[in-house]
Image (tube, rainbow, N blue to C red; front, side, top):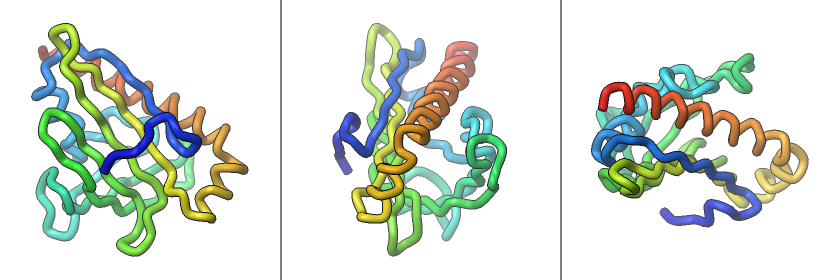
Length: 160
């Protein structure tokens, strides 16, 4: 799945991490570790018999919206999975995707340029939501992505 990371329904944050793409990939594709890094998703687990990253694998994330609530489980499905390059997933039910999240990795200066991004699905309901709450939610998501990447960077550079 490829989409515009800078379109009206998307946001992206990039950060250089002084670790090779293989190490960054191992971290971003292990959804069970997201609780260590994300300010909103405090745990995740593979579901429906899935045990690791591959296209079609299912997992659910336990989210505390804005870090304070409400708290809910979000079903997710991996939509793109290329080791050391890209890990993407859709959030929503089997019938309705609400948004998409992912990580793109590029070798850079002996380390990795990591881009975390999200894109709202362009359905009428989601476009309306984004028109009304997009500016605020977009800023919140950008701060959250930056925090997530900073925390990942600290772990990967400490272990590297």
